[in-house]
Amino acid sequence: MMKFPAIPPCLPLIVAAGLWAGCAATGEPSNGSGLKGGPPRIPPPSGVDLTHVIDTQAKPDPAAMERRIQAIAHFSAGVSLEARQKGKEALDEFYQAGMSDPADEELVLQVSRRLLAQRDSGRAVTMLLKATEKLPLSATLDSWLSIAYAQAGKLDFAIRAANTSITKSPVSIQAYKNLCAIYGDMDRQKECSAVLHRAAAQKGAGVEFLTELAAMHHIYALRWPADAKSVVPRIRDLLAKARSLKSKDPLHLRALAETCRLTGDYPQAAAVFEELLVLVPDDPALQEQAVELFLVADKLALAEKWINTLLADDEDNPQAHRLMALLCIEQRNHAKASESFAKVLELNPAFEPGYYELAESLLAQKKQKEALQVIERARRRFKPSFLQDYMACTVQMQVKDYPAALKHIQAAERFAQSAGPEYLTAGFYFQLGAVQERNKLFKEAEATFRKVIGMKSDFAPALNYLGYMFAERGENLKEGKELIQKALTAEPNSTAYLDSMAWVTFQLGDAKAALVWQLKALKGMEADKEPDAVLYEHLGDIYHALKDDAKAREFWTKSLAVEANPKVQDRLKQLPAQKP
Image (cartoon, rainbow, N blue to C red; front, side, top):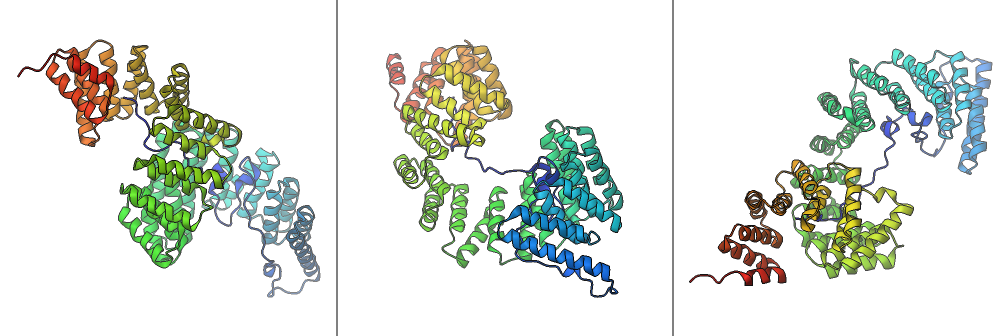
């Protein structure tokens, strides 16, 4: 049986990940500033805080005071130029500020951030090295020096500075992140793994250290997926240790929840958010994030409680109504979901994704005409896009207007090729293959499904679809059976895949074995409570081949009760008349 996705399979929640740079701690340098991950994120200055420059308790030192005055003057000039968007001139002034008083570590760090954000690694190294002449090099300065060296391409010096930082402060996470970033860019897996083990062995690590280290393990597993199986238990152990410290710091808990979410431990992330909501009960943004996690973690009662809280505080909160719609989908109340999505668009008609979410909820109710009307509303308001044509294709597939579906999905592919390659996923190409098959473009469909399997070898829907397509056409039957078997290995209880296995076995000439598979599929269909005309038809065909006309009549009749089919009707008429 060909299994179509219930909802569009490639409407991605696209998250731009900076990999190693993406788990930078607040207030610490981001190692991506020196590597491929990009510069550190620094907020635009809203003012100047130079209180750190003046030490009111120190004895007067005319030379030191002169250096500080010069530093203040240059820094103030830099902020003024920055506010006027004169970035190059501002950077020159910031650099002069740092060089005027290199003994001021905080000033040097502020300037280093700006220099490295603009990839001015040469001056960053010069200033940081000059700072080492004036004061003992701290672990933090070592970390920044490591970043500056890495950005300048001096990786040996960068590694040395990071290791020095670790020696000085073994439970400061940044230097470990720097090393992992460097070794990751150099594709040196063994050294990167050693850094992670070294960090995990440190005693006395705090919540922030353990949380970020767990995120680093996750990134390592993405970089070298063959090691993922061994890394997952270590991630869980680190997160468990972080939770056991029972921090009450909301910043720590938010970082911990985000790392749990990042690593796929949604129940743990939801549990941390429950703690957060006790500590910070009146933050709508936090409540919205918590609800999203509660939905993913299947904590629907908690999700509903906080959605109602959001709506009680502000009944015109569009995000709260959207979350209510998502909750209703989880509860399979698509009618109410449609009402909530419609409310979102009423409150915020400029929210483009809301149109496609509303269309999906209408499709779930078989309201194809209304879904097309919603998509047309989006077309009138927004520029042509991938999502418009992809959703239109989905609707046309449901109403069986296959030529129109093909037109829309080809348009969607062109949009993605030119502007949105992130949409060209295995899920998208699976849908394209299904549309091609429905339009009897069998060679094109075969090539597309093979492309999907090449992208993701265990993509069960594509394995099943291609195998079933071969069975339907009576070609490549042995390969078809192998493909369907792989799909069943991934999802052994899938009614559709069991039906496919029955049908390919039948096409191979073994009706008795096919009946065994088909009865398993029938049992699954009855459990799903979703009668399927094709499954009944196949069962009738198999019984007819086994010369059991009574059973053949029974299941062909059931097939016609679900969906009219002239071919099945003709087979039924050709059966011998029933004996009285």
